[in-house]
Image 1 (cartoon, rainbow, N blue to C red):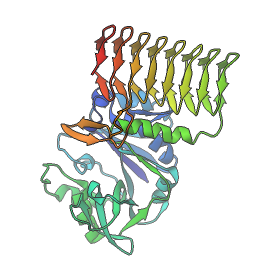
Image 2 (image 1 turned 60 degrees about the horizontal axis):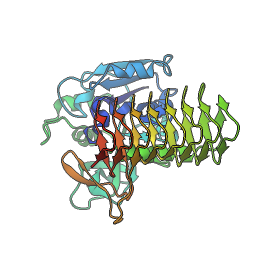
Image 3 (image 1 turned 135 degrees about the vertical axis):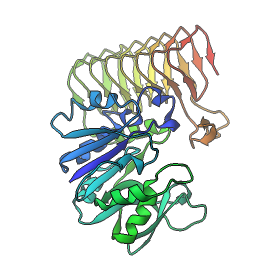
Image 4 (image 1 turned 30 degrees about the vertical axis):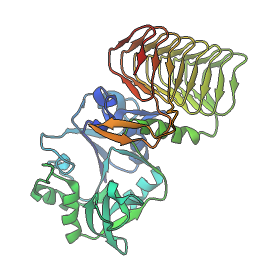
Length: 391
């Protein structure tokens, strides 16, 4: 059996993060999104076909080290748009798994759909069917899928994991363009169910949907909250306090006076401290330096980033090659306790959060005593001047 992973699209709701990183390669604690799913399926399939397009050259760079013994084939999606267009010209005989890149699924749910006979889709019950494709069913057999119904039709949300046979290819070649001028896999499914018994399998475990930038932090918290033991693979100096669990990778150092409250993840060749306070599900990647007297809470920091003294960073995402000079302060709370709303694709979107952060993008430099209001974005290659307020 083979698996196809759809990973060609940009992920526009996650901008500016996806300006330089394809959505499937966004890091969620110790793996990228696509690696979380690869880890669940690679032992149960003969070949993994990854359909790529946007920044496609980055996929082999990231995946080679961990999956060099797995047969991975990259196929570039043509200019035709849509989820069905992505599998055109992929000729696989017999059954195959089709998996979208939007979410992270539990290993046991993916293994179950792979090993079951016949044809399936993963679903989950939802109280907000208007946000999903919804399956109508009888005795857990699909009758039809309706995209984001305005009126209630059923409550089983489509999770974009399917097991098909090769007849789906003929259907994909015959479906018309949708009103969005795309070839939609849901249109193909509605033809597939007329000729095949298409079963619905409700997931038994959690799945993590990453549609917006703030979902990155909630996804990281999900995995770090499950961390049950510490793994210390390098150096801890005297007078370091670890209240919960920490993964400390090779050549990473916790200097004296570091205080870690709740679970944290610290990658290779990173130096923390002295006298630094890490809180609530923070992950820090390769070659970073967090200097003395900083407080960092619920924050994801990517590679080659320095945070100088006396900085206070909460609920934030800091990307690659960032240099934060001393005294940088992020404000993360609306004092009226209303939800923070964020413009996404020109639509003001409710995050359902009272606290939200700043995104600092690649190659940013902040000078001394800079400040930020809640939910702000500092774009690539920006220089923030001393005492500047980011409004």
